[in-house]
Length: 299
Image (tube, rainbow, N blue to C red; front, side, top):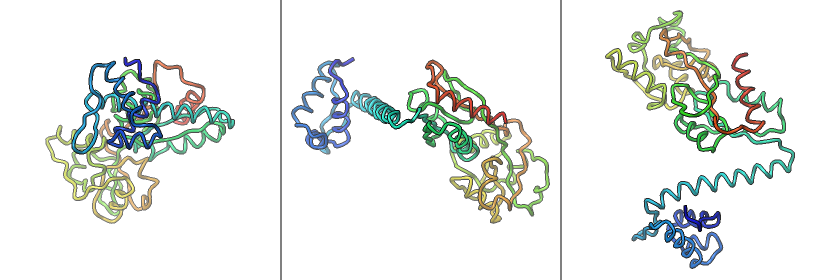
């Protein structure tokens, strides 16, 4: 590894890549341009490969530079988080837990569960961020987050996994629909009913299309929306049924105007899980939050 890489050099390299110019990066970082050039040249000499490519539109990173840029940003973000966390302790905070979760989890009980945790631990800070499942796993694995919560359809790899809450995929229909009083409905029947698609390309949409393909049937929607709240409104407005997770949809506006008929198939019952890094001893606040979430799910 290049011996000349330090935090200052990393910040200067990121600035050059973002500004597209050594001169503008030097001005931004309040340093002379020649010093910036020397630092980057020292790394290039050490690794034996160029980090920057000069073109008509300015400077951009080379393939090796792209690797350094990605890693440098992660290192600098980690250092900034470390600085913020240490300053928190000076103000009496016991710790800071970073949680990343998928949209489905955040739409259900996670916020309430974190709220009860913070009531029990007022000197712990918890930050949450919404990401798709692969990014949740990556953030926990790379150390950008302490805890991840997602659907267990994703492969956690070497991460530690604990069960969290469950939810049920249902056919959401208006209360005057023929199926409104049914106790359950088969997915094959759903294919003839579903009219409102939710979050195209998302995990539920992908699951439904995969199961439809197994039945040799197409999954056709009259309209597609990006979120559960819009889907609930569309169903209530009479545009047709939609497959929705009951727990996430039941709290949205106009949910009282629709009925939720559970899908009969086993795969329609979703298990959410909590993931943490298995090889690292989690600090107290992280362990406290994980145990709290597990207890809330059992209750």
